[in-house]
Length: 75
Image (cartoon, rainbow, N blue to C red; front, side, top):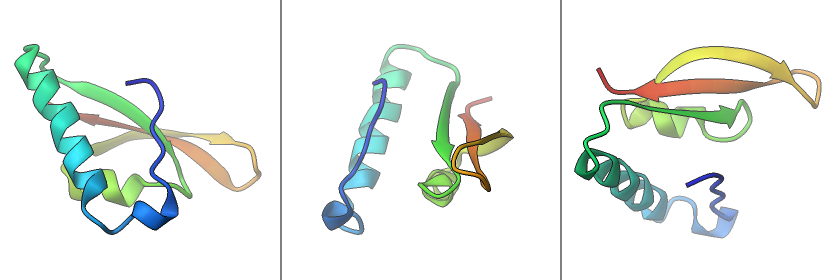
């Protein structure tokens, strides 16, 4: 998966949880040991943290005051 966006009207329905779980399951089925993603500070870092993803770092981006947050999950 390259980019993913869940429209606001579908948030809070459990669909994001299901999609993330399926993506993680696919990674395990392919014997992946770790995964990396990034999200924007105003998007979904809390969502990923609730699912066990850890922050690796942040890089400032546009608009001013926001950042790309890099996250990982795995050993």
